[in-house]
Image 1 (spheres, helix red, strand yellow):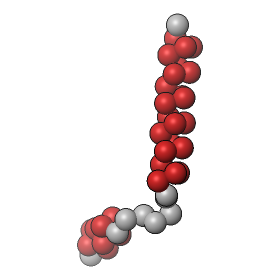
Image 2 (cartoon, rainbow, N blue to C red):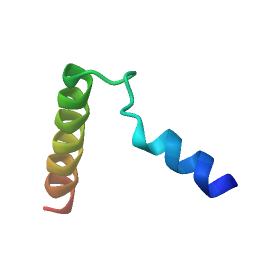
Image 3 (cartoon, rainbow, N blue to C red):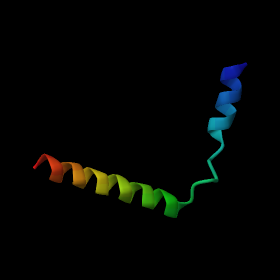
Length: 41
């Protein structure tokens, strides 16, 4: 029962996140990675 409900939820695309939000998230990740590399060096 629980698994079926979970599957139905995951099949629907999440409308909360727009492409712009995803791009910002990737930029933040890349910035974090570059900062870590700089810190190690």
